[in-house]
Amino acid sequence: MNNKEFVAELSRRLGYSQKDSSALLSALVSEVSGQLEEDRIVSIQDFGNFEVRKKLERVVISPATQQRMLVPPRLVVAFKPSTQLKDKFNVEA
Amino acid sequence: MGGRVLLQDLIQGVAKRANISEQEAETFVRTVFTVISDTLADEKIIKIRNLGTFKLVEVNDRETVDTNTGAVTRIKGYRKVVFTPDNALKDLINKPFAQFEPVVLNEATALSDMERGVETLASDDEEAEDEEPDMTDAEGLGEGAEADGEDSDSVEASEGETVIPEEVPVADEEAEAFQPEVSANDPEATEANDAAETVTDAAAAENQEQEADASEQTKETGDAAAEPVEEAVDGEPLADDAELYEEMAAANIEYQHADYQKVQDQKVEELNVTTQTVEHQTIEHQSIVHQGQDGNQRQGSCLRLSQGGMIALFVFILALMVGSYMAGYYRVLCPCTFIPEADNDSEYLQLPAKKDSLATVRQFKETVKHSVADTAAKADAGKATGQTAAKDVKDEKTTPQQSEKNQADSLKQLREKAAQYPQVKNGTYLIVGVKAVHKLKSGESLLRLALNNYGSKDFAKYIIAMNHIKNPNLVQVGQDIKLPELVKK
Image (cartoon, rainbow over all chains, first blue to last red; front, side, top):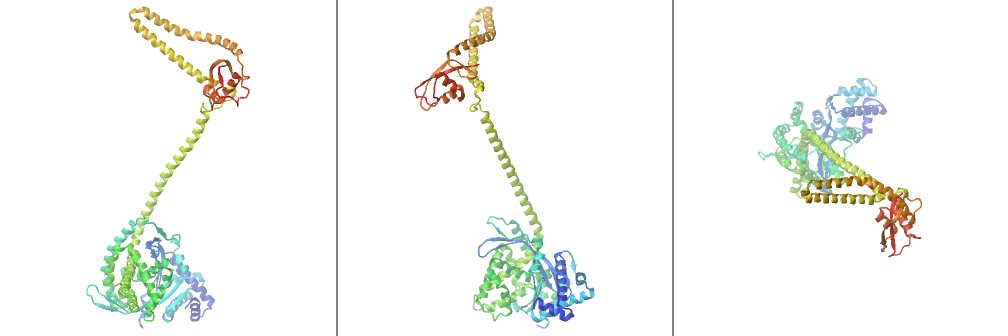
């Protein structure tokens, strides 16, 4: 399901226009990313946690050229699904 | 960490941003997440713009062998939710480190810091080993037990659980950086596990092997640490390793025709790398601080060194500049090469004059010596000789007075003499006689003669006048040139 279909589904469920729900969704997304940017853990009950993790710099060797490269550290977003969410997919399985 | 943001805070934020009531915002936000989870259940994938993609990934059954008992246990397959952040979100979050780029290391680069990190890693692995049984227990009891572990905030359990699945894409990305073809197939590789039987594609197999190679090589960086990890992986699979083992099992089916053992080895190595990188993470959190400091110190010392070098270089250049400047002055001031105005010849006759005075001084000394010798010889004569010595001294005293008179006399004489010789108009010197006669040799010129005999080329005009030379540029070899005796007017 892509973004468009998702917005359509949202507006169907909530009874909003597609435009409204699209605007609301982008507000939510920017809220979440804004919180993450400030290094906070965004935890949504029954869904999971979003958090920022730091990947440290490391040395890798290119298999093609045998060059050693120092890969710089970076920050990545990690999502950890809640147990409820996990169970939801695994109960029937 | 900046703390924890709960759903309620999120709802308030959205309400503020979108100018809607909190109630509306709450229903909206809740709906969003229920829709996401519902859609995941139905379609297994959902993309949200600017946030990322949620995917439901099926993990196949797999078998594990307990290293202690050798018992084979079968872990049931399950589904897991994987989130891949959107590029926009990735960039936004990575903004603080955005300026960094991968650097090619030289062969000579010392990795002492890295090695230190690896050493600590080894000890951490042992710790991890101790804690792993708890996790396998949790796994054995099922997902519910695992949930308990999480709720009680067992840090290790939760850490390991989430980190590892994410490390897998990281390892993939590594390969991506160097082998774009491989990376393109990475998602396929995971999907291949979903439908293991259907995928017998040789290309996919190759890709996985290459991937394994890539991770194998990364493993080399922390080889020492890898071995204890290997043990840990073999015997006590982490909760998430179970997933990877599922992959492995799937891979094994695929490789029935291929080199079974080889692939398994590679897979194990891959696992090692993933677990190792996980451990790395925790250590790196600690080590980054002192690594950073070390880096700063090294940079500082480099700076200091280069500063010293720069100062030395600067001083050297300055000295060179001053030297060259002074050399220029010295050249200008040097009496040998200074070419004076014709009227200022006076300085140059001082050269011979000085020589003369030196000679007279020497003569004086000799006479004094003689007199001393005389006095020694006439020591017997007693007072008489003393008187003569006194007379000598008196004589010496009188000589300056006499010489003054002589000079006045000689001036008159000189003028008379000068009348006999041809003179140079407006010259500062008078020609009063012939000092010497010089026979011209080949390669000589009047200018050079003047330079050699009088110290300056400007005296050539006196030589020309003295010898009545009409064309000074044309003189014959063997010609006798009279060198004039000059006196200042």
